[in-house]
Length: 160
Image (cartoon, rainbow, N blue to C red; front, side, top):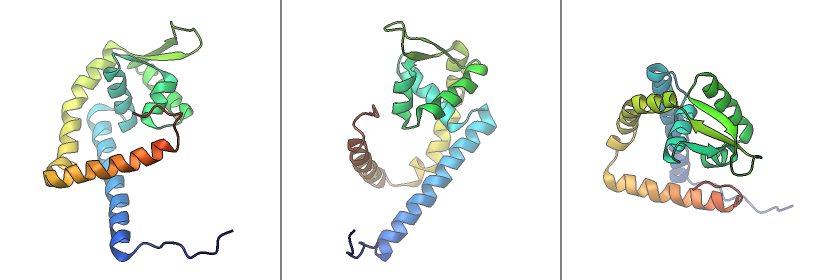
């Protein structure tokens, strides 16, 4: 057991950490609130539609969960709700019969096409248009460094 003094954050580091936490929470809450109000979707449901759309309309459930950095059980629960709404459907994997594939339905594609313009406007108003392009590039570098480090800790995940 180490008795070394922790490397405490200085005042500037603490301020940056707290603004990151608060800003992230407020931003994600705003995105979720706008999607729910305008389209009846949670932010996670919207992201599932996006991931499926980008993967030619279908992904194995395990791969979908990994791409979202969510537990399989959380994604399974969300997909079940989306399946009940007719946005996606699950089938056995045609490749090996063991895995489960989540497929975007026509209704899911239409919902995504309808939601995407207002979602991107929320992202613009709440983040992109508020910061200088140089600061946005810095944010990209910072968050990629964070992702690279944390993904390296879990090489079994297919996050990128």
